[in-house]
Length: 366
Image (cartoon, rainbow, N blue to C red; front, side, top):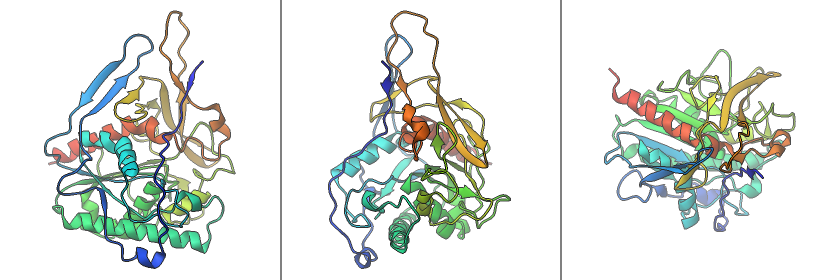
């Protein structure tokens, strides 16, 4: 029987409630600080499981002095009953961030602020209310404080890659529109944005007033000052999808109402652009399990909707003993979230390589 592929799930300690008034005065706290000692570094190992035969392990060491930073915002994790998570670091959230983002330290220094995200108890699955939008603003302001604190302690010439998943991607799209794009010096430092599962929309022609502030979508991997963004499904998102369609409920996390005629942002993390290619999944934690040519992805467009279409590749049964291969959940076709939860692990290896290519391009620029 095929082994089913499940999304990375994170169990965190219960947070105490936090009032919006108190949130405005909260100091910046770091999971991975931009200066000084950090636990967010270390060797990463991938274990490649071939179709048959022994597992092939490869270990990557982080550079002693990385030349770039990866500013990472994690997805919805807080189970608190309050609208916004408190400004607190726990062992559970540290472990979750390491599991999700440690592979980026092969290229960059990992920088992760705590942010007062909207909690899982209060994520809107229908039209957002005034309370929902107020909670999003609290979350954004905490991200903004973290970003500005980061800028104060790092050289103005140091490049940074923005990396976010789910609510984290929505927060970073706000940061791009509201803070970074209007500030040329900040915008020049951002050499790549990787925004996964954020429900981000763009306009045509591109404009500073669209969901990504007019920042170009990456036409190919290795291009700098562009964005990789997508929402993953196994088929066209249904009319009931809560992410992946313009105006879908979870799009409110980016605090952006798409204009009529907007389309979903879709860049394939394999090559950039839209062409089909093999994914490099990093599943689980360190060591990460990976498979060669088991999944492929391409940006598809149907009925005016764009999405990253992920398919598993079934190889012929040639007989003999085969290693177990993961499979996509067949219920994904009918799910209102598609492959939202699975998309991070399925594309993580490609995102890491894309970040490395961007830093290499920046490092050899004329």
